[in-house]
Length: 143
Image (tube, rainbow, N blue to C red; front, side, top):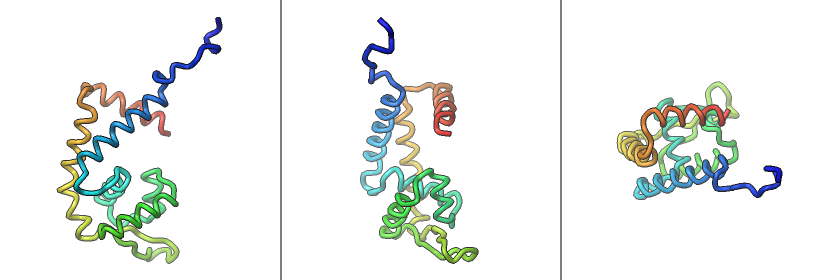
């Protein structure tokens, strides 16, 4: 019997395994960040801004690989929480720069250790070299 006629072992496919790993990562993140009421995507945007405050909304969208419509909603929520503000881009009046507020800046030393702990929990079963291999493979897949 030809192999292509057999049913797929869905649980062994890369897509399934990646989806389940992502779900586990999100669950760990949500448990660790429960008291801060942030989604993984919102934390990610804060992370980009902690490294480089005042990014344009378009550049933030490109860096995070989040579509512009979704990005707008994420920024709206962060703005509602008082963590960021939109400022008109001095070089392009049609564009906005996303700037951290003092409250948003103050969260960095609080949230970074929580994120590191969540990351450590997620990869706890892997050896350091396995982590590096995994990151390298995921980089190849995502581009």
